Image (cartoon, rainbow, N blue to C red):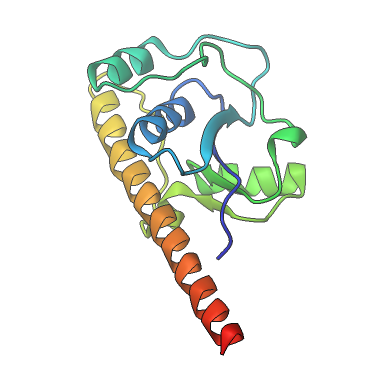
Length: 165
């Protein structure tokens, strides 16, 4: 498995789920890991991040540096080697259909072995549970990216050893 050039967390509006995932990733990933951004598939106009999102992130010690407004996914955001993690299967399908981009595109659940979508909460009391689920999945994604990186390094070392012999 090749190394990822960047991580793109993607949701529909880029006002709650993907910015939260980005903030969690930025805090919990190590320095050598790919940088993360978050984007939305349907951002008709820039709007502030959901205030509940900022409160949850601050209370949990996560920060979204420089991400005060929602941002539309643009073709230039899809760099070669990017890992795209959507929150739902419908977002994944929409990305593939609209951008003709299929390389390393997964729902975050699919990537970490949980085949369920993460939906933006509607009720007040559901925000914390949603954020907790995102923390779990993003941490699992970080762990998987690290495992893939170390597996790749081991494979390269084995190839280098066989070439030397």
